[in-house]
Image (cartoon, rainbow, N blue to C red; front, side, top):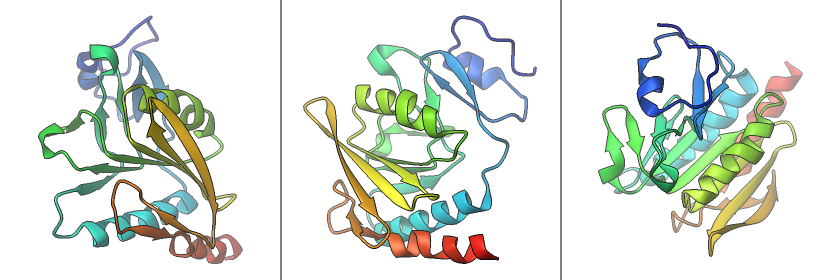
Amino acid sequence: MALPQMVEHYTYDDYMSWTDNARCELIDGFVYMMSPAPGRLHQKASGGLYRQLANFLEGKSCEVYAAPFDVRIDPEGADDTVVQPDITVICDESILTDHGASGTPTVVMEIISPSSARIDRIAKLEVYRRTGVPEYWIVDPDRQTVEVHLLKDGEYITRSYVKNEPVPVTHLPGLSIDLNKVFAPLKALSTS
């Protein structure tokens, strides 16, 4: 069965029944189509982040996953939100399933592109805030910046970082991400 025509509301069961190769996410029951494959800049930034996280987490209880990795978040007990963050850190192994995760991740990182920026900055920001994701990063490869949203009293407090600044991962004490290792390869890529 291919992706159905838009109706008012979809659930996780609907999402799991779709066999089309199109990538999508389900946010509050609405389907958001994703581009077939991220571009090279996106992939290099993702690889730089993933590598630093994976190296730090080796031998620790938290695990890091790169997209595509389904994260089923149930805001207010609903069963209508499945996202595929670019990078997901899970520190509660009880939420891991055969299909990804079902619960609230510890850290989520989205790498924005012109086609995803609105969804990442508005729809996902709200879902992550509402469902209690403690730390949400928005990574912009074009501007070589990172916005870190930290949950405090149900609201996000935001701090922005630029390429040459180390970015602490608040919920992984002892880890700071070196943005030069995330963004430096991008400059070489864009000139070649």
